[in-house]
Image (cartoon, rainbow, N blue to C red; front, side):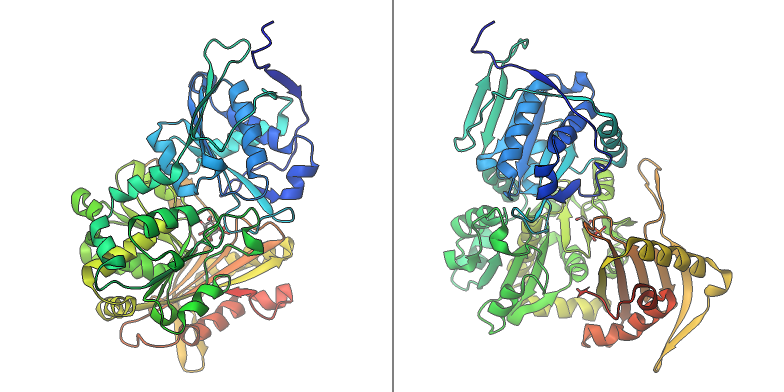
Length: 564
Ligand code: G1P
């Protein structure tokens, strides 16, 4: 045998019963991947085995990650297994880094059959943190339920995996590396790419970079503060906002990706991105944005840290969509929001006569609509916004969308937001999270609540808190029929809709790593009183939400763990 050929081994293994991917892929504590024999290998083999051999032979697969602890080790294993499983080429980000939006972009650019994205999103990283593996398909978006179910079924019975253990990667050098494998006719190729450049190029084709440059570094430039929270998006912020659009280097902070995210929680909200908020309080910056670990989420702030709720952000981008050249050229096919996201977007859709879709929580439903050419802009209340340019949420895109609006309108974030409320009214919105609840208690609460709201007498029932009276108009368990493939997705949240348009929605998180997380979404619409304090406006609804569900009594809690 030729010694220069890499050996392909088939290694026996035993299955695990808990490798069912959630909406964000398989997320586990790092120590689970480290301590359970072949836990990573089993799951990766299940992904490859779920792809028909004919599609896999000679195909291209993208591998990227947010740089968290285990990232590089996992990439080497994945590449070794891809080679042994007949994949022809693996495209990897330089140093193993690639934000999730960039992965989506690169999958599409290289016409790959899919991509393996190593991230646990905004969950903490490091040896005691989380690790995750997500599979995206050829459209660049998260795999469908049918695909993830197939992966899960394979993982339950897996007996062996294939690997080229001798294959060694150099993640530091851009370009092609080829490997000759025994029993393989063609060499296997690894291409280390500059994912930042691929992504930047996509952005150049969407936004007017000359106008953005003028806004950010021209004579009357605004001041910005961008916080990458030591996630993977730092180099993208630096290259695009600083190097290309001229923001001063010190306006982009925490831009060095770290494998433990600097010990922080890379979750762009008012609690975890409090540093950004603090740095903006004195009014030194006109615009602020923070991004999560893998670059999908965003938080937008105006001067003095004015918080733009993600639901409002989505509605404002929709209302100003033609400030973005991409949409001027392509037109707008539809808007979409997930069910708990406030109905602020609905008002814009109605006024502009653009189709609106209300989907279950999670990005894959948007992808289906986009692939069918029915959707251009979408978002979720959980700090995710994006357009049809990729099939993932895209934090930096959202910030560039806002900057495009500022560049066109030459108004402050506050003026733009207030104008929006004056025009459409304001959908006050908040989310209460009850984390780490005992799973049985949470499930029983949801089951009983469903029975309560399904009772015929529940509709028209009135609830009074102080001088506020709410009358139930509709209550159900949200169910979605996909307009593209007619598939039905059930149990997507218990909704109580009141006659004034206010809403209470209850959901169990699909992604909690410990216990259950109960989410309560509260929303109230005001046409005239648009300058009130959100929590004060929503307090009566919160009282009603707790009363109807008996949540506190059933869980022993006295309040939510997090309010956003
Ligand atoms: C959360 C968010 C949801 C988002 C998902 C994936 O899911 O609420 O909007 O799509 O993360 O990023 P949840 O934990 O609520 O199931």
